[in-house]
Image 1 (cartoon, helix red, strand yellow):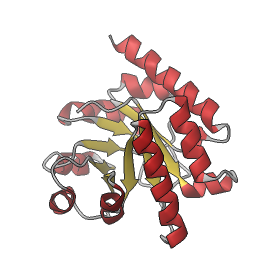
Image 2 (spheres, helix red, strand yellow):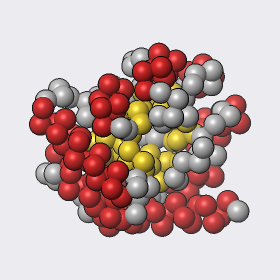
Image 3 (cartoon, rainbow, N blue to C red):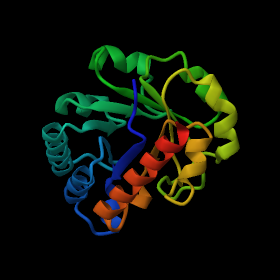
Length: 211
């Protein structure tokens, strides 16, 4: 598969910190032209949060945007979305029978051994990070660094998403190190639509340079 080079992750806690309604943020990301969007909620899943998820899923469906739910394969199935799994979640091998062969599955890794093990899993893409320091996780894993990404990329026979502390200022070196896509969380705020448009331009420039 081919992943969009700009992979926005709508983290509800980050949106709340900037006092922006996550659904409004999702609308702005989609309006900017993003082709994929992940919904990330690390706290308690109340009925209100699930209704928010449904609204974002419907928005992506109507707009033809690939929608992914972080961690929760059960909720992803309910809204017809892909799912992104972490190292503490069920393995892709366990989730694949639940969601079906056509559902997108992503899987996070944080070091070389996890990356090698993930290569045996039925995931459509892998994520590696944090490439740089990040403030969106309470207990972040050790930084991989651009050099780690460059060294390990040849061992991954599928799309690789770089994540963790990536900004418009350092994205070019991440793409140059071999990332197929970059996941963006904090650098989407506070001017969400404008930031998403800038990110799409950064991704397009990286694609042109790679040709």
